[in-house]
Figure 1 (cartoon, rainbow, N blue to C red):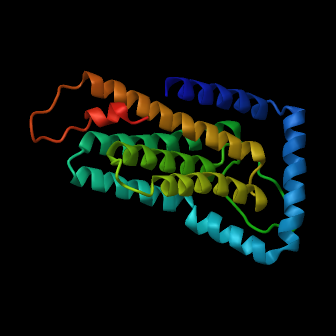
Figure 2: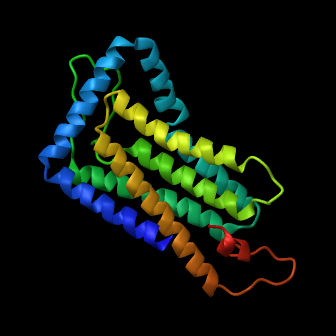
Length: 227
């Protein structure tokens, strides 16, 4: 998990530098992709409506935050308060990082004479892509700590999470409100947040005292064994 956090963090910083300095090959690639997809989005209004429903409702950041909030409430109700705070804190930090970097970079979104969707705030990194990555990553992590070998459906849950993360990134590019590098940046920074949260939680759990018989410990042994 440490290497995952470091690699995703380094790649994000590298991408951030390329975007901030306006590296020509990256900008040309971004422009080529969004122009090709925008032509298709304009020509296929029915498909575009499907993308808007997926992007603006099903995979919207507020939908993802609602899922994270529900997980926090359930964990708190189950007296796993340290883990609940970890999920809430990571989600909040991700939002602060996202908005802070957006303001710092101030990248403009693609501009069209015939837009099929609209969005506010700066473009880099993609808030939809980052929020989906953070939420799905945290939820899978929490579930993995409690999953029993005899239970079925883990593959389905993991697939739904992966499709959501990749799918929301695709919709943002298809709808012409983000450059591909915005989405990649959201994925990288989002995963860095998740990996860092898991890593620091495990380290804190190893230092925490053991709970007594019959007590619920937020940093139980299953956490160390999962992933």
